[in-house]
Image (cartoon, each protein chain N blue to C red):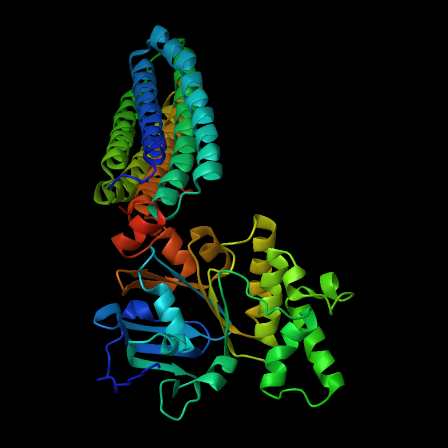
Length: 274
Length: 229
């Protein structure tokens, strides 16, 4: 079973580059380190992600960006031998506090994965699943309304409204990914984590997801891991560059892609990394 | 800087820098020959300037094509992006410098038919000053030296001052001897062209600064803008 230890952090130092001036802070990470058994995967990461905006996490494979993403909704709890130290706070509340129920946390912090993972159920039931689980609908009409609104927000309604009872698996890859996003937003989360949400999609489906991300950011704090520099540049307002488990640079996306402060960032985004 | 993982990308960028260097070399030659043609009233030299100018224009077209291709196929970022954009802008500055040098050379032909005036010396001196500015800023570009570029940028004030005093001097000659008015008017245009070439040099200096540091130089440069003199 998962084992989780939280150590009160000794007033971590935040470097200037770890702050981005825009909106109030939704997710605050301080000196976050993650260990898989003896191996340390993430070293002392401190950064502030503002609400109602998109933060992109970039870096080469194995740099710790997904590990960091997965510590924001305590997905790392599910990995045996995984240990997280430091503090992650949402709206100022430490998510690793003993009183926090990880299931409720994950309702607050939705997640979308690389490969679309609809449940082998109908389109309607896919979206309604979390709503029923958390008892968020008061009546059948209420539930219908939530499903419809979520599918509209996910930009999928017009394509599926006539076949809500069809299996979610019968949709195309891009539609499945939007279905999964609809499922995530149906339970009214505050934060949406996306782990390479477009890497299995064609350019048109990718553009639709990116357009969706752009719309969702008016209501949610979105944190996206992507291997596509162009995608990070297109969808995010701030970009964090990770390398070998360390946060190298965090700043406004425009600055990171035109004039990065660190040569390692420069080398990575211009394709010079060995 | 380390090589790109995709080596042909590095080659593309190097090629671009090479093209700009060639354009710069041509512009320098045209300018110094144009100045010499005016100073020594050498019509043959003046004609070679006029004939060579299209070489710069053609290179600029080449550079623009390559940059369009590079942007579409490589999607450069960070310093690569700055290098690409500054090459595009510097190419058009150099093309303008070529045009202005050609215009100076054309005036050498007109000046030949008139008596030389004392003001000619002043124009030649200003020409050497501007030519030195151009050489320095091109060196700063190839060596990526932002300090050297900044020096060119702040030294343009000297060029402007030179232009102002030359302007007053030439007007005095015209008042003293109305027969020189035609020649002096042409000399004023030559001086004005040189002053503009100085401005193009500061624009290139700004591009070098941006390319190296990623920051813009302040928009207000020290300026002598005394139109009432």
